Length: 397
Ligand SMILES: *Cc1c(COP(=O)(O)O)cnc(C)c1O
Image 1 (tube, helix red, strand yellow):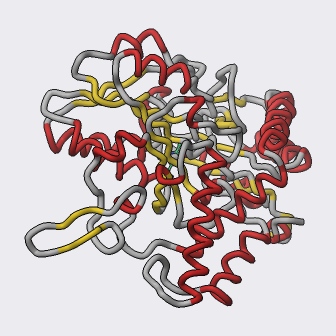
Image 2 (tube, rainbow, N blue to C red):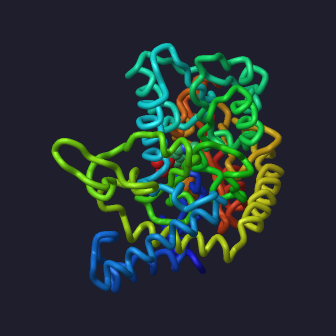
């Protein structure tokens, strides 16, 4: 078993972990990377003249190249380490918008964004008097690309959209959306939090200008994420945080900034977590991201064929192209009640609005029950969910 925590028993029942869109579990080799770092390498990076500092720096920078390769970035200088997707998006919303967003300008987001890809743009818009425009989506959970096209004006400065919705599971056509944005001379940010561990990612093929993701949703530790950006934009953008490492020279009269990517990495980063991210990328490589994608697709087919037999089940998000995320409701019962009953049977799902309240408003529901998959999810996990739902469905309503 690569993932020790999956041997856990809850309420004396084997754990069935189906909350992978919230965070994935960590394989032994990622856990080992953390302990090895603190056992043998711990020291602050980039500044040291001693052995440990040099070793740690080398390993840290090697992970940057691993990330570069994993997402096919043109250079590792375009890979900025952050604390996660939320910080990555805030970095762009703060720095890019400071430079490029002015009064009466517009930012386009989709109606199915995570709060982390809404609120930073609202804050940026409020600061300067710009406004947010929203791409609507169909009942199935498919973005309306005709309306998307029609939202562009000469005031549009940026598009921000997720590649996979964490609530609906929809895989959005980000490559096509990037082409449309660029047709209007507008850059696009892709929130890859739900795609990066589930399908091959090629930022040059997508041709996005920014790509943001979290380590903890791709088998890596919490506390590390990535902001990839197009070089020309990153060079023009002001620093996000000020402090150590991001400077070239500081005097009280004037400070000059470090080169990319260090300009955006003020202060001591979470070195152990970055090394853990490297171990997670190794793990995904060993499994093969194509194999993981195929496995999860197969699980989706398997799960849907059985879940549709559950009495009174209603699926939220039925797009033709979906990742391993299933949101549903049973009759008129509250998602929280369903989640609690499943929990007592050892099944971990998420309930609520999943940080996507506008999606709940769109459907007029308080929340959903969400089951989401990872590479280690098995047909037995699905069977357990299906059996449990058959068992509890009569208790509801
Ligand atoms: C989880 C998630 C985020 C936020 O990620 P954090 O790791 O909490 O910063 C943003 N967007 C989507 C689509 C997500 O699923």
